[in-house]
Image (cartoon, rainbow, N blue to C red; front, side, top):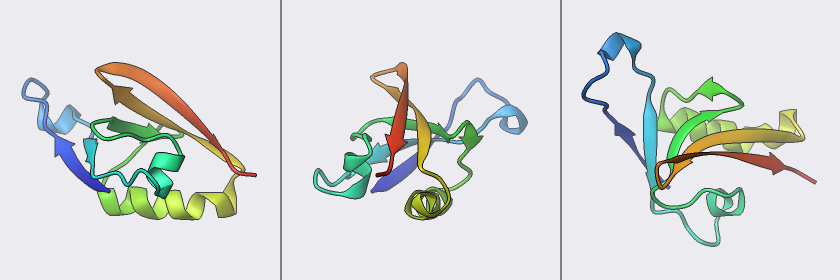
Length: 88
């Protein structure tokens, strides 16, 4: 997984929350399994802002230890989408 921060030109830096476009998602890997696709834009996890790619990766691998499910807020093809992930 490669995450590239999106910079919004008309948003003042002190009011912008980071958003990341996703690339290189392995079709047989964890991120694909939980519903993420190449070119999705990651907005948040459980409505919490993701401040850096390393933090997101840690969060996703640790999440099953602390919660049975979580939600990902993304943009796919420019449209908002909420992905609910449930562990069994």
